[in-house]
Each structure stands twice: as C-alpha cells, then as structure tokens.
Length: 399
Image (cartoon, rainbow, N blue to C red; front, side, top):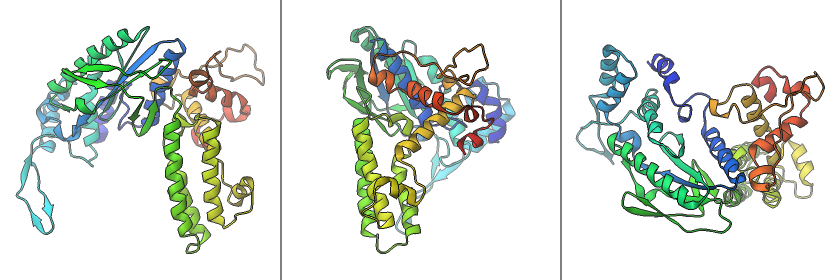
C-alpha cells in the first residue's frame, strides 16, 4: 500500500518537504536554511525567523479532509474508500496498573508507528507551502520555520507578520492546533543584540538570541558556540560515568560504550556546527582524549598515541569526512533537489590534473563566508586527489 501510494504521490510533493522522505534528513533541511541565511547576511540583509509550534499534529489530522486532499491529487474512489477504511473504526484505551479504561473511538490522526502514517501526514501538509507568499519556509515533519529578509527590520517584520497570519489561517482551515505562546522568534543581521516584538494572532512574541530548531541551538550570529558547549558538557558528563566503571569493564566493552555513548553525542548534524571555532574544537578534543585515556587505561600518552591505539579519528576529522560526503552527494545528484546547486564546478576547457575543481566565491566575512558549508566544503573537495573525486558510487567514495 505504501509503495503504490508513494510512487504516485512523491512527484507531487514540494521539494522543500524534508520529513519522512528517502534521501532527506534534518541536516539537509538545516543546510538549506543556514546557507540561504549566510548568503543574505553577506549581502548585509536583515533576517527574521519564526519557528511554529503545533500541538499533537499527528493526532489531530482530520480523516475527512485528508481523503478530500487525496481526491484532489487524483486517487480513484475505490482507493479513497480503501484508505478511509484503513483510518477509521480504530479504538484506544488507557491502562493504569492492572486497570483499563473503556474503549474510545479514534476520530482523527494517523496511526503513529505505522508504515503509512508519515506518508499520509506529508500528503496532508504538502499544500502548506502555497500559503507562504512573501517569506521562505523550511519544513521537517510538523516543524515549520518561516523566515524573511529585507533591507531594514521594518520590512522583515511586515513580511513575517503577513505570512505568520497566512500560516495560522492554514492551520485553522486544516483543523490543526497552533500554539503561538511557544513560537520562537529571532532577528539576525544586527550589529548588537536586539529585542523586538512580533504580533501573532493579537498576541506578541518577543525575540530571543537563540532558537532551537530540529535539535540544534542556533544563535543570532550563527557561531553555534552555545550548542557546541552543550555537546561538550554532555560528553564530559558521560565520560565521568565511564570513568566510574573503568576497572569493571574489558577494553572491548569500553570501546563499545565510547562509540555509542560518548562519540555519538557529536554525531548529530555535525556539518551544521563543526565550524564553531578553534578554542571549542580544542575543548572537544580534550573531552575525546580523556575518554580514550579511560578506555585504554593510559594516562601518560599524548592524544595522537591514544588515537592510534584503536585507529580512531579526531572528531573534527570525522566531521570533515561527513562534510565532503555531502559535497559528493550534491555533485552527483544524491541529495535533495534543493541542494544540487549548492556547489558549482569551475569551467576548465582542458583536461588537466586540476580539473573537477569547485568555485571558491570571494568573501570578506568569517562567519558568513569562510565558515560557510559551501566555502569549507569546496576547499576540502579541491584538495582531494582526482581519483577520489571520480569515484563512481557513494559506497566506494566513503571507503
């Protein structure tokens, strides 16, 4: 059922729909958002963004409206009847201790944990993008971020207020419950910290210096210092936990815990925050070094020797490999469509050893230029040996 419906409907999806789609993930959504912001900030534009919060989006989706949308996408009556039959006549009850409540009918929502649930949810929200007129949007599942840019803050506020009204209208029409009190609002491009208010549904939302989007804390200067500090603190606490067990575990067991319990802290969307700065990267290496000392019970060797014990890589080297993998996928059409033009190749008329190079755009800024994914990714790619660049498939490239 999923296979047939997905093959039919996927070509009708908005390219910006990132959730629950093959080849799409949160990192792709964030890369698209942040590189667009950096481009506008390099042009000395102001940017305003508001992160929308929906209450129980998967549970409030109305069945009749979903069927109506499927009908508009061209499904036959028999197919609509089949899907409606799948959604309806479901029941639920609660258990407390050994006691059960009476059964209650489920009158809305898609079955969570099911194969079809995420696909049906994507179909339902696909037309949301048509309601945003003056701003841009980034989406992943029920996380919708609306952002606008302009030459002055007044222009940005005007665009945001108009499109947040459009978004709230869409939520209301589609019987989804928005929670404006939990919306996050941030302004970028100002030279100093700025406190502003945005009028949302007759209520005011104050701007903050950071917002949390898809598990990443984004600050108004795009330094990611706070996010990286939080990661190192988490990894440091887990390293202390491992230290308490160091004499009770074999080395092989500690390696498993090091990989799954400590190293994994830095494994979520590393391409987004990896340009945090030299001092924070040194802190990350210090945490990694301390963890490896506990793993191998070696408190005298230097960092390089500890890495060589188990052929480990520095976390920054791991992140560079992940970045260059994203470059390869972009150049070979393996990433979402909206990222395919992120990197551009140099035009060289002769078959030289320096062919297959990427353009390095001139930039005068550090945070928005030299520390951008496009610039750093292009630099690393240009330094690669030509044989790696010409690898024919992703698996071989990663190896």
